[in-house]
Length: 393
Ligand SMILES: [Zn+2]
Image 1: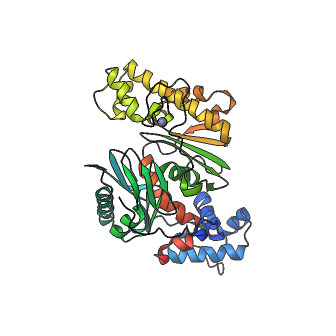
Image 2: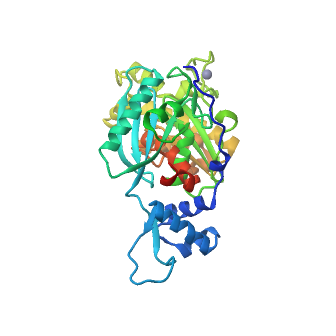
Image 3: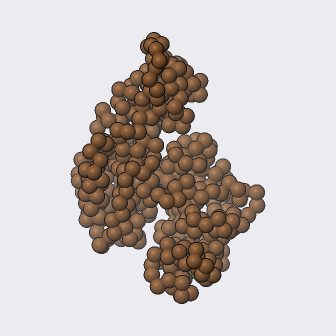
């Protein structure tokens, strides 16, 4: 698909962590919390915290969490404030190979509504149009909720700044202007990112990596990719190419890869490969990796062996990345590891050594794709709440 417009320049202000961001994040992480406590935790002046809280209350992003018993003067610094999760949602669109997940998330990153839309082809315009219509249908069913914006996530090479899927080989997408197409169809601000980075943001904001100074997310689905965040910033690199690990060589790998080599990480570990091996072993005759899990749960030893081998190989891949980047926490999204304790054990054996305990499964085992899309928009909100809040749209 040709690019139909020059992408707007990146907006540096929305990348900067503002005082407003620090205050709203503090309410997210500690709420209900007194304004005086926020001031203490953040190092901002009490007057400044009170100002931001008044602003967020006016906008409907936060509220006092209990009625004051008596007037304690302007600002009432000891009355706790908390997120107001009753008014606003963000939309999420996650495009995987066989289907799109559309979702509404509240300000705490919780799934309010979700729907899966199976693809009828891989044409980008029609997939995005159906996603926009799916979101509109979810919003129609919740007329009290106002949508602040839409987050889009997909595997492959996704450029946040231009809002483009640059290259998604499995879907055959090339230079798809997602922000423009979804924005035109929804009439809402649209934010676009790669799903491994989206999930790093979800883990930082709402999951296990909260408080970690550095976190690596390793996503192993049909697409295999990684994202890395330090000090609250996800690394993108030029045109958001960071995290492309699909063609890292796996020692001892045997799967031929589209790139012409053998044993590339994505070719070895993708769900397609898992399903093909499962078909060969007589575990399943389909292409749904969940069927391999179901078979393992029913006691099929071949299914279990395939899952354990895959988890162990994911562990070896995590080890490579740990050695290069040395993050405090590694979060892994992979179906076996998300659902089976023995796969988590195999993963950690694959990692080996004293770093194994720092490798953890995703915080969102049942909603990882639903959370991914919406988290792109929530990250923008928490990064610069006054620019992304209801008054601004
Ligand atoms: Zn390759």
